[in-house]
Picture 1 (cartoon, rainbow, N blue to C red):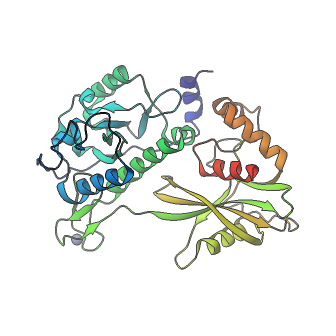
Picture 2: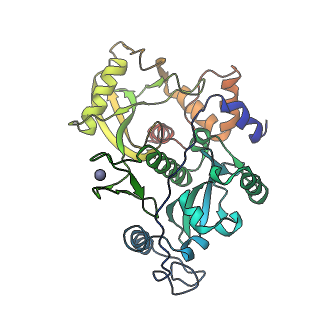
Picture 3: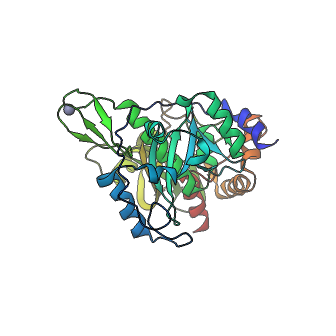
Length: 362
Ligand SMILES: [Zn+2]
């Protein structure tokens, strides 16, 4: 089955809604990036350091705002009704702004500043649904990409690209849901880079929110088995790590101990931080990944209001599944949809995949 058909086959398992943005503020100044051959002021072919890129992005967000010059030299991650434009192997199908053929001011009403490449090119995300189906068809014709179900894309993309796609989705959603000031109720407007909103009445400035979520791979103290769980919204056959929001007043370790106790009735003996990842489901979350040890002798007491299933898997079972999802992710997921495979671990774009991989490699 080719990947386009797999997109269709798996779409049932991954549902989401599109977004629509408000009008931005517009800064027509051309003074901030006027040296060199591109908006970053560097000569073509040079590489910018991380610090240089961060300073330039900060300057755009906090001082100069967007300029036509910056936009016209930018590259875009294009969304249509929330679906990102991806290549068949789940990389971002970047498009030059000039290939979109839209007015820069109109573009800014539907776009946000994502980042900057090492070569000094600014990266944008843009929702094109407001431009009509003609632009969608033109994009598909020029790009060689497909508008791919967002959740599927996020799970399948390489980590650096999934981080950009997740960031864009979260910020688009935050603007859509926060059109008015939480302090006085007045209407708010986004700045030109979409990094914040300012209330038109009390001038309070609001920034996109981020919630901490602990996600943990639980192993027994003898390291013979791993605990994986299913939520009802998971793709059929997928078992993942326990995850839950860290409550106000809790440390990460306390949140993880509580979640494991609540969801599967086990006592956590130790917690080790491993890695983190932004994840934009169901809202904007910072996933904080850990390994945890439990005794392995306690009976499971599964909270069925939260989980569809929770099971101990042998290390060999998990290792085989990891090898399969790494080698043939689409085929592995599709075979579960078709009922010929009742267990797979999350694919490469997820922090759960990294946690399982690092545990098996340690
Ligand atoms: Zn206000």
